[in-house]
Length: 254
Image (tube, rainbow, N blue to C red; front, side, top):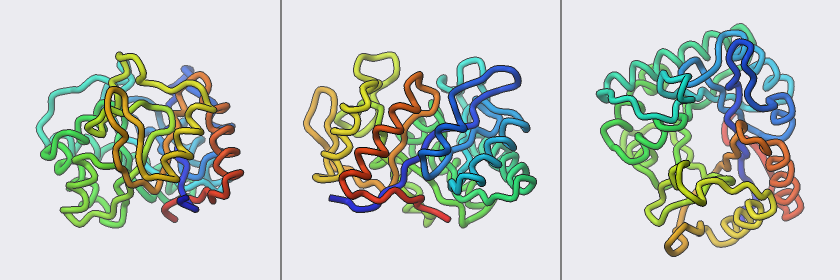
């Protein structure tokens, strides 16, 4: 069984008076935090507060850019040329880097959110636009990519530092893509079911899929969504079950 892995969550997704998730609780559980940076969610104060909380809990920090679609929470594709995607991502990563300077915490990696992540996972040109922008901002920033997707393949081809992730609470299709959220089996809501699936993956390197055979994936990080109603309970069970199995939870960067 794989003995060491990262546990990450999408956080900092509140906006003004609107609150999303329990970041303070999640930051006591996870080892890396993907912090929204003004695209699908967040604002300067939310970014700053989440960054400070991450620093105080010793959690590694990454930027979590998404489509500029707060009304749709970044889960709708906005048609854009690859270079436009790059500039959009650059603006958001830069915003988080600026707030991180004020919070005295380094930004170590970048992970795309929602529809942007899914688009870059299946479209090599979109992935290249995204990755090129990140590399020009800071070539040491790690691309956190869904395992086995175009985003991972293109990042490695372009020479960008890249780490692959799997999802604890999302269903997989036989082609390695995530089950769309509007379809059955998209979300795994039972923490024990999610934990058993993860332990099986860590033992075999194969991920069960919906409607097909298990597929081989490689991963150095596990994502649990911070915006789900049972996110904290899910993360707590996953951490406990992994630790009990002898798996060391540690950030992949920093």
